[in-house]
Length: 430
Image 1 (tube, helix red, strand yellow):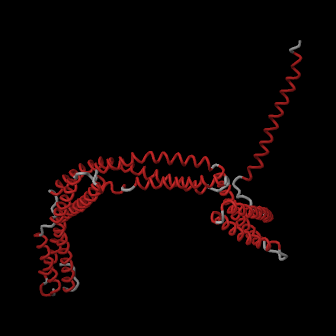
Image 2: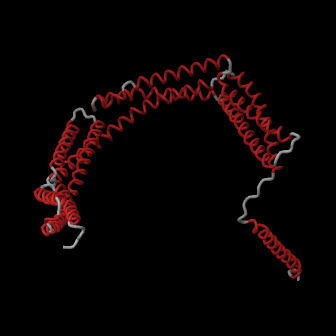
Image 3: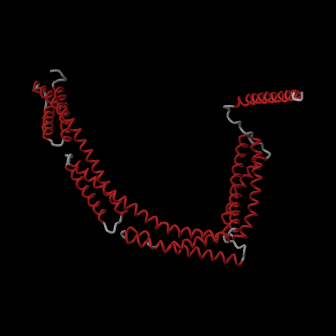
């Protein structure tokens, strides 16, 4: 019986849950109905009154930011000196100029003469732009000096890090000097010349960093609030410069080793190209092209021999020389291939061009023979020229020149036929 006493409560709970579900569903439908008409519409234009209100708010925020920055600048000058804060002062001066323009526009909006809505809109947008940019200028400078103050508070820790980095750099100097000696023995002097003096320069950089750290230590010992962040940053930069110089020696070693391997591959490729040039040369009919291939191949051969036998080696220079020589040979081969293709194409077209020229010469000759008395010298001269050009074309060894001659012969024969018919009275029928 006790279990049945819970049934009314369960029924009530179920009814409440169903009512909530139905209510939420109705609310969603209404929301969708409200939103649906807005889909696809362009954003509503901001009311001019809202623009003016936003401009007023931005003006106040900008003015407060400039006043705060002015106060911040005085503290910064006291802490770091005028030289360290000149960019801050310049930023505030620029911000004040923009603020002055913004307030002048605000005055125009507030004057007694009513302005058009478009003018109010334009001026309000300009005020917003000026206010935003002025605010951003002074805020960026204020934050920069906040960061600098944090750096000052952590200066002792930073100085210790710099000391550790200097010690690490100095520990690398002997290995770097030894590596330079090894490279100097393995490669040509010109190959390692760019690295000359780098260990000394790195040591000078570490000395400079140590001097700056010492100056910062002395300043803090004399007055714990002495600003030393600039010296710490300069010391860090000097350490980085020294480490970069030592890194460059190791990179040079890796580069020379890589270049040596690439040089060997380039020599093999160059010799293969020379062999290909020799095969192609035997198929080329153009004597000038053959001569150019021979000269370029000899240059590649010479460079490849130098690269393979130079002692001590200079792989980077050898790679450059091989690249230049093989590029010239490649270009020569390309020109030769083009020339040969041109010859083949001309040889193919020559047969048809000769037939055309013969046909035009025969037509013109027959017409003149049939009307000897009425055909003048111009037509006969053209015909003789056509016959001469065709005869030369048949004797020409160069198919390109022969093709040009056959085409000239056909043109002259056509002209001869036209002139002969004109002389004969315009009759083009025998």
